[in-house]
Each structure stands twice: as C-alpha cells, then as structure tokens.
Amino acid sequence: MKIIKKINTSAAIALDSLGREVVVLGKGIGFPPVPYELEDLSVIDRTFYDVDVQHRNVIENIPVEIVQASAGIADLTEEELDTELNPNFPFTLADHLNFAVERLRNGIDLTMAISYDIRYLYPKEFQCAE
Image (cartoon, rainbow, N blue to C red; front, side, top):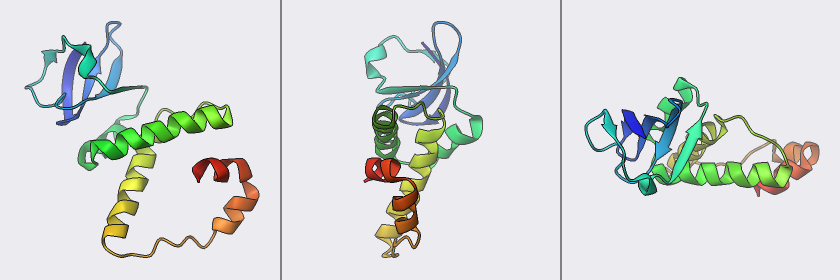
C-alpha cells in the first residue's frame, strides 16, 4: 500500500493494490515523509473507501480515538438496523462527537429539546443510538 498524503500522524490517504484511494488509520501512519510504501499492513487499524475530500479533511484535528469510536458506532448501526450507511457517516459523526466532547469539557449543557420527538419517530434508531 502506498501512502500518498498525510492527514495527521494517525491518518493518511493511501492507494491500495488496485490503485483506489483509501483513508487509513493507524498509530504513526502519517508520521513518515510522504509518499512512501507501507510494507507492514498490520499497522493499519481501519480503512475507509469512497470518502469525500471534505469529510476526510474533517478528521485533521479530531483525535483518532473519536474517529475510531465513530467507525465502530457506524459498524454496529449498520448491523443493528440491517442497512448500509454512507461511507462519509463515520467522519460526520466524529465531527459531531468531537464538538460534543468540547462542549462537555467547557461545561455547556447538551440537553436536546427534540429528543422525545426523535425517540417517538425513530424508535429503532433511537434505541441503537442509546
């Protein structure tokens, strides 16, 4: 796999063996000067295909742990709801969660006025989100 662009020290854009662009996550994966050939694929924790440029740029300043948690949430959601989510969803969710974490750290109330409506209108989705 060839790493062609650094996003941050734990994320990069790569080309797979078929020449397709893929976002890869892994400790220190964006650290070496690019481009470079990644020989040890075991350092890759996650891969994401078909991600829009604007969404992959979102993760530049988001901790990799939040991105990985968002990807895990997306996987569970797809399984639980038996659906395929947009490949950009983990990045959008990571941005949302990162902002929520920042608000919590600053003592800002996160009460959602429409949570009852969401619970009523989307019961399966709400249960999955909980």
